[in-house]
Every structure is written in C-alpha cells, then in structure tokens.
Length: 147
Image (tube, rainbow, N blue to C red; front, side, top):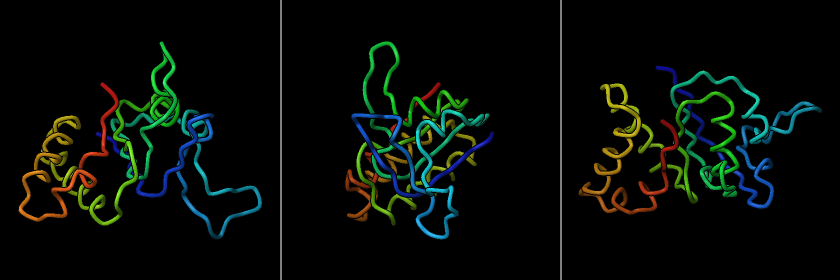
C-alpha cells in the first residue's frame, strides 16, 4: 500500500473552498513559490495512493454542495486520485497528534485497514490511563473519507 502523510498547518476558507490548503513552508521560498499547497493544486496531482493522512488543523472541513459532497481538501484529494483520506474537523495539538499518527500507522503496519486502524487508535486513546490522550481534542478531530 502507498501512503502520503502531511503534518503541517492547515488553512480553511469556507467561502471559497479552492483556497483551502496546507502550508508546506514559510521560509526560503523562491520568487514564484508561496509555500502553500491549495485544494486546486491537490486536485491536479495524480496521487495513486491508498491513503493520504493530513495532520493539520481543519483539513476535513469545507463547503457542502449537494451531489458533490464537501468541497475543499476532501474533494480535491479524491479528484487527485487518492483512494482514501484522513483529515481533521478542528484544530489539532502538535505533540499528541504526532503520537496519534504514530499509533495509527503502527496498526496499518500490522495489517489493519485504514478505517479500522483509525477506529481502534481512537479507542486506544479513549481508554488510556493518562489524562492527556483521553481528551477528545486529541483523538476526535480525525475523520476518514474514502472507500
């Protein structure tokens, strides 16, 4: 299976979903570079990936359009040839999000399907003895789009 993982900052524009995206860099940019990967850029890619996981704030939010779904990053990634995606519905915490992604991919490596791995990773964090990982802000923002 082929995976693409982004752990960065997300940008949401609910009025114009094509302007939503992720920030890849804010430094050392050339004159024609903005360091930003927008929804329209993502839809032009030919991902051919089984899963894209974007650990960044509000990447799963967009504008609901009847007959199309959620326009923004979810639709852009689908249009770009990605089979399934894990995105977030609200701001995420850096440290605990990195730990969540690590536990998720450990399950993938052990053979679980992405939807199952996401559910089981959430359960793992909910029943954790530590107070930090049990908080919904840590595990609840991640949602699965795809087949």
